[in-house]
Image (tube, rainbow, N blue to C red; front, side):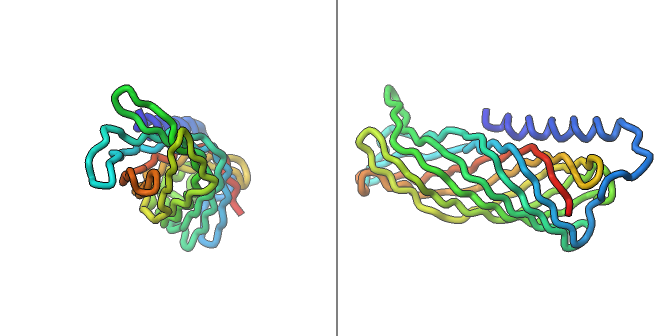
Length: 220
Protein backbone atom coordinates (compact mmCIF):
# COMPACT_ATOMS: atom_id res chain seq x y z
CA UNK A 1 0.00 0.00 0.00
CA UNK A 2 2.80 2.42 0.86
CA UNK A 3 4.30 1.83 -2.61
CA UNK A 4 1.20 3.48 -4.07
CA UNK A 5 2.67 6.85 -3.04
CA UNK A 6 5.62 6.22 -5.35
CA UNK A 7 3.42 4.98 -8.18
CA UNK A 8 0.92 7.81 -7.76
CA UNK A 9 3.55 10.53 -7.73
CA UNK A 10 5.33 8.99 -10.71
CA UNK A 11 2.10 8.80 -12.71
CA UNK A 12 1.37 12.42 -11.81
CA UNK A 13 4.81 13.48 -13.05
CA UNK A 14 4.41 11.52 -16.28
CA UNK A 15 0.94 12.96 -16.81
CA UNK A 16 2.10 16.52 -16.27
CA UNK A 17 5.07 16.01 -18.57
CA UNK A 18 2.91 14.48 -21.29
CA UNK A 19 0.41 17.32 -21.09
CA UNK A 20 3.14 19.94 -21.39
CA UNK A 21 4.89 18.14 -24.24
CA UNK A 22 1.67 17.73 -26.17
CA UNK A 23 1.22 21.47 -26.42
CA UNK A 24 2.97 23.48 -29.13
CA UNK A 25 5.31 25.83 -27.27
CA UNK A 26 6.95 27.90 -29.99
CA UNK A 27 8.34 30.72 -27.84
CA UNK A 28 10.50 30.32 -24.76
CA UNK A 29 8.33 32.29 -22.36
CA UNK A 30 9.88 30.63 -19.32
CA UNK A 31 13.16 30.87 -17.41
CA UNK A 32 15.31 27.77 -18.09
CA UNK A 33 17.51 26.12 -15.47
CA UNK A 34 21.07 27.42 -15.45
CA UNK A 35 24.30 27.62 -13.46
CA UNK A 36 24.00 29.95 -10.48
CA UNK A 37 20.21 29.64 -10.32
CA UNK A 38 18.41 29.29 -6.99
CA UNK A 39 14.99 27.60 -6.82
CA UNK A 40 12.51 27.63 -3.95
CA UNK A 41 9.69 25.06 -4.08
CA UNK A 42 6.57 25.04 -1.89
CA UNK A 43 5.06 21.56 -1.82
CA UNK A 44 2.40 19.34 -0.33
CA UNK A 45 4.28 16.27 0.91
CA UNK A 46 3.19 12.81 2.00
CA UNK A 47 5.52 11.07 4.48
CA UNK A 48 4.71 7.35 4.43
CA UNK A 49 6.90 5.14 6.67
CA UNK A 50 7.49 1.58 5.49
CA UNK A 51 8.26 0.47 9.02
CA UNK A 52 9.59 -2.87 10.26
CA UNK A 53 10.33 -3.58 13.90
CA UNK A 54 9.68 -6.33 16.44
CA UNK A 55 9.30 -5.45 20.11
CA UNK A 56 11.50 -7.62 22.33
CA UNK A 57 12.14 -7.96 26.03
CA UNK A 58 15.41 -6.84 27.60
CA UNK A 59 16.55 -10.47 27.33
CA UNK A 60 15.91 -10.48 23.57
CA UNK A 61 12.71 -12.56 23.66
CA UNK A 62 10.14 -11.66 21.02
CA UNK A 63 7.05 -10.17 22.69
CA UNK A 64 4.82 -10.96 19.71
CA UNK A 65 4.23 -7.26 19.12
CA UNK A 66 5.27 -5.20 16.09
CA UNK A 67 5.76 -1.45 15.73
CA UNK A 68 3.35 0.42 13.43
CA UNK A 69 3.75 4.07 12.43
CA UNK A 70 1.10 6.12 10.63
CA UNK A 71 1.53 8.38 7.59
CA UNK A 72 1.29 12.17 7.58
CA UNK A 73 0.73 14.87 4.95
CA UNK A 74 2.52 18.17 5.50
CA UNK A 75 3.60 21.41 3.81
CA UNK A 76 7.31 21.46 2.96
CA UNK A 77 9.93 23.66 1.35
CA UNK A 78 12.72 22.74 -1.05
CA UNK A 79 15.80 24.88 -1.76
CA UNK A 80 17.93 24.07 -4.84
CA UNK A 81 21.15 25.68 -6.06
CA UNK A 82 22.71 24.95 -9.49
CA UNK A 83 26.50 24.59 -9.62
CA UNK A 84 26.30 23.88 -13.37
CA UNK A 85 23.39 23.78 -15.80
CA UNK A 86 22.93 20.09 -14.95
CA UNK A 87 24.28 19.62 -11.40
CA UNK A 88 22.49 21.00 -8.34
CA UNK A 89 22.12 20.47 -4.61
CA UNK A 90 18.73 20.45 -2.88
CA UNK A 91 17.81 20.74 0.80
CA UNK A 92 14.27 20.09 1.98
CA UNK A 93 12.65 21.20 5.20
CA UNK A 94 9.41 20.12 6.83
CA UNK A 95 8.13 18.47 9.97
CA UNK A 96 5.70 15.57 10.26
CA UNK A 97 3.79 14.03 13.17
CA UNK A 98 3.48 10.28 13.63
CA UNK A 99 1.61 7.95 15.95
CA UNK A 100 3.45 4.82 17.12
CA UNK A 101 1.41 1.74 17.95
CA UNK A 102 2.18 -1.72 19.33
CA UNK A 103 0.28 -4.30 17.27
CA UNK A 104 0.06 -8.08 17.54
CA UNK A 105 -2.64 -10.68 18.11
CA UNK A 106 -5.54 -8.96 19.87
CA UNK A 107 -3.33 -6.00 20.82
CA UNK A 108 -3.47 -2.67 18.98
CA UNK A 109 -2.55 0.16 21.33
CA UNK A 110 -1.04 3.62 20.91
CA UNK A 111 2.21 3.89 22.85
CA UNK A 112 3.77 7.11 21.60
CA UNK A 113 3.50 10.09 19.27
CA UNK A 114 6.30 12.27 18.00
CA UNK A 115 7.12 15.05 15.60
CA UNK A 116 10.02 14.46 13.24
CA UNK A 117 12.29 16.98 11.57
CA UNK A 118 13.71 15.07 8.59
CA UNK A 119 16.01 17.38 6.62
CA UNK A 120 17.29 15.75 3.42
CA UNK A 121 20.21 17.01 1.32
CA UNK A 122 20.71 15.54 -2.15
CA UNK A 123 23.06 16.05 -5.08
CA UNK A 124 21.00 16.12 -8.28
CA UNK A 125 21.51 15.67 -12.01
CA UNK A 126 18.98 17.55 -14.16
CA UNK A 127 18.22 16.31 -17.66
CA UNK A 128 17.21 18.83 -20.33
CA UNK A 129 17.79 21.94 -18.15
CA UNK A 130 16.98 24.32 -21.01
CA UNK A 131 13.70 22.61 -21.82
CA UNK A 132 10.24 23.22 -20.47
CA UNK A 133 10.09 19.63 -19.15
CA UNK A 134 13.21 18.76 -17.14
CA UNK A 135 13.37 15.51 -15.13
CA UNK A 136 16.09 14.86 -12.54
CA UNK A 137 17.52 12.21 -10.23
CA UNK A 138 19.45 12.58 -6.99
CA UNK A 139 21.01 10.91 -3.97
CA UNK A 140 22.11 12.13 -0.56
CA UNK A 141 21.76 11.97 3.21
CA UNK A 142 19.03 12.68 5.73
CA UNK A 143 18.74 13.24 9.45
CA UNK A 144 15.86 12.19 11.71
CA UNK A 145 15.36 14.43 14.73
CA UNK A 146 12.49 13.47 17.05
CA UNK A 147 10.85 16.11 19.26
CA UNK A 148 7.61 16.99 21.06
CA UNK A 149 7.25 13.37 22.19
CA UNK A 150 4.20 12.13 24.07
CA UNK A 151 3.66 8.74 25.73
CA UNK A 152 0.36 6.89 26.06
CA UNK A 153 -1.28 4.01 27.93
CA UNK A 154 1.43 3.53 30.54
CA UNK A 155 4.31 3.26 28.05
CA UNK A 156 7.47 5.35 28.12
CA UNK A 157 9.28 5.45 24.76
CA UNK A 158 12.61 7.00 23.75
CA UNK A 159 13.58 7.11 20.05
CA UNK A 160 17.17 7.74 18.99
CA UNK A 161 17.97 10.49 16.50
CA UNK A 162 20.33 9.59 13.67
CA UNK A 163 21.38 9.73 10.04
CA UNK A 164 20.26 7.84 6.95
CA UNK A 165 20.43 8.13 3.18
CA UNK A 166 18.03 8.88 0.36
CA UNK A 167 17.49 8.67 -3.40
CA UNK A 168 15.06 10.76 -5.42
CA UNK A 169 13.49 11.28 -8.82
CA UNK A 170 11.38 14.15 -10.02
CA UNK A 171 10.38 16.48 -12.82
CA UNK A 172 10.07 20.23 -13.25
CA UNK A 173 7.63 21.62 -15.79
CA UNK A 174 8.22 25.29 -16.50
CA UNK A 175 5.26 27.61 -16.54
CA UNK A 176 5.30 31.20 -17.70
CA UNK A 177 8.16 33.35 -16.42
CA UNK A 178 10.01 32.09 -13.35
CA UNK A 179 7.35 29.63 -12.18
CA UNK A 180 7.34 25.84 -12.55
CA UNK A 181 5.37 22.80 -11.45
CA UNK A 182 7.34 20.22 -9.50
CA UNK A 183 6.68 16.55 -8.69
CA UNK A 184 9.23 14.73 -6.55
CA UNK A 185 9.59 11.31 -4.90
CA UNK A 186 12.25 10.41 -2.35
CA UNK A 187 12.95 7.06 -0.74
CA UNK A 188 14.66 7.40 2.63
CA UNK A 189 16.39 4.61 4.55
CA UNK A 190 16.62 5.19 8.31
CA UNK A 191 16.69 2.98 11.40
CA UNK A 192 16.19 3.98 15.03
CA UNK A 193 16.45 2.19 18.37
CA UNK A 194 13.34 2.41 20.55
CA UNK A 195 13.85 2.11 24.29
CA UNK A 196 10.54 1.25 25.98
CA UNK A 197 9.76 1.45 29.69
CA UNK A 198 13.37 2.23 30.61
CA UNK A 199 14.74 -0.85 28.84
CA UNK A 200 12.12 -3.43 29.81
CA UNK A 201 11.24 -3.59 26.12
CA UNK A 202 13.22 -2.55 23.05
CA UNK A 203 12.97 -2.49 19.28
CA UNK A 204 15.18 -1.67 16.33
CA UNK A 205 12.80 0.00 13.91
CA UNK A 206 13.42 0.51 10.18
CA UNK A 207 11.26 3.52 9.27
CA UNK A 208 12.31 3.83 5.59
CA UNK A 209 9.66 6.37 4.51
CA UNK A 210 8.58 7.27 0.99
CA UNK A 211 8.37 11.07 0.71
CA UNK A 212 6.19 12.10 -2.25
CA UNK A 213 5.60 15.78 -3.09
CA UNK A 214 3.88 18.07 -5.58
CA UNK A 215 4.03 21.84 -5.65
CA UNK A 216 5.05 25.11 -7.24
CA UNK A 217 8.63 26.35 -7.65
CA UNK A 218 10.05 29.80 -8.33
CA UNK A 219 13.39 30.27 -10.12
CA UNK A 220 15.64 33.16 -9.06
